[in-house]
Length: 311
Image 1: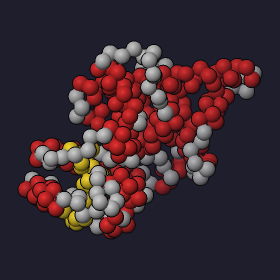
Image 2 (image 1 turned 30 degrees about the vertical axis):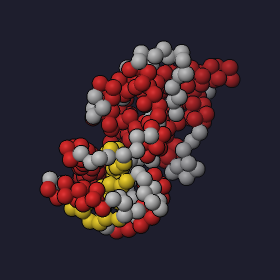
Image 3 (image 1 turned 90 degrees about the vertical axis):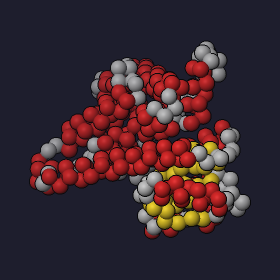
């Protein structure tokens, strides 16, 4: 693994480099003392796998740096800082960082976090390698003989069912609606290549209702089904948030919590739900906000990652 360390404290950079080398975690391919010295193409050119970056730096902080390099840099990011502001940490997670290490540097924490990130990288690469191998085994003619939509349906529903199980909602009423949404999005992407962006939620639920009720539905029946479907999906998503928050509350290093919580939900929502569960708060007081569209988008792209679609 190739690492790049950005921190205005030379002692911290030296300590991190020493830990990486001593534990044979990889090689430090570069260092910088400020975020203003980083750019996405440079990290891409150096084939950086993991970026360790300080939150607060003199010229350009870590959050602004991550925001700027994000379009080009596809590696993993670990943020380091002594700041414990929930707002700043939440913003960092929303930008896609993998972990947050607090200062002063703790050797065991650094080693544990880096090994978890390396494990995640290797897992993602293994999945990609398996997908490539499967594609190579199937000849072009064999792929073309299959009817595209049923094949896509099988793949997307299988991976979707696995993810819903991981998220603790495979048995919820809204799980079928979510799988039907995945089917619709597969067809939508085939027809539009997402060139217009992700379809609005209103359009998604409208098409789901039309498919379920058929051509003879009345406008009143359509509105009723759309509302019912939206409610089922929201209840399922809320139950998933509750499930993941419970896992995180029991064990913050739980693999499912680490893998899914910050992807499917806003970090602040997860933390609020964990706090509510910890203090046994009643759900009637300031309910946790749920971003339905984000959840559906992540579910779709994660499902595609597990089972790639034929070209």
